Length: 106
Image (cartoon, rainbow, N blue to C red; front, side, top):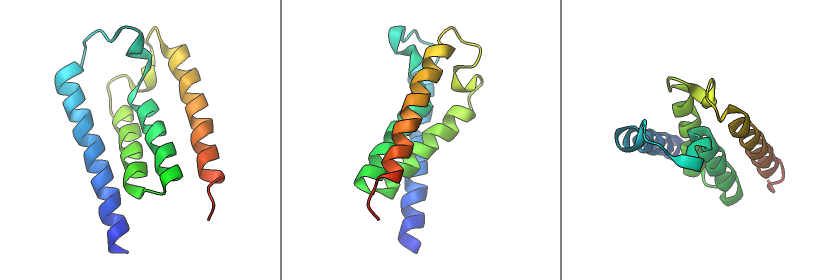
């Protein structure tokens, strides 16, 4: 029981560390066409990979990035010029993530 807790907390810590580095290095810089990619998109990708690989640390890092997105000043691209495309991409990734979870063998 102790090991899953350590894996989960390590994944969250890694996600928050990645978020802190991103904020220090890239916050407010023009990302061009990549501006549509938000923290939660990367979080959903990590969750999908974690489910496929059965690695709790990867899933928890994904959840950490989703939490980091919520803690931003303008979460989920709300009010931005790329909100529509960000939301469409987020929905597609969410469907893929849920399918990855549901289709994994138990």
